[in-house]
Length: 222
Image (cartoon, rainbow, N blue to C red; front, side, top):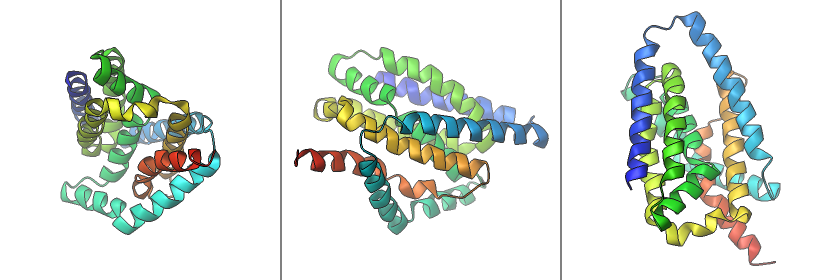
């Protein structure tokens, strides 16, 4: 668990730096940072999405996950948290950071490798990248980015502890579609940041659980 704790601490430190920097950034420069993050999100989302093995599984995961998230009103819950903390962009910051920090080959393979072999090299590398990313994101979205450190600790830590049971996720059959689902969500975040469309990305979070389940069900019929 040490690499995961280091990763969570890196996100917190990066977020603190971003929160501190946020106070000294004028609205004009904040706007250009919004555009930079929004456009980059579109690029990252496209890059993640093209890895999909089966877009029908991606669509099914998004549809089922979205319905579950809408029923649970995850986005509404996150917005209430943001209102409580007086952070209007809490939801976007939390969801975007959580997806970027947790949905990717480096996270899954690194966590499972750490759990099975005690080698945290990949997670330490990821910690540096997440620390830098959290500084930029927190300078725009504030506390939501810092709170995502909790997601890193819980989700990534769970993968480490359950590495022997979750090692199947490193198989490209599962990994590629899971990453693609995350990519679609990052695209949605990009559209929201650029104020093109508010896609309520938080409600699609259950899709990340549905994706490997659908892949497994489909594999039974092969």
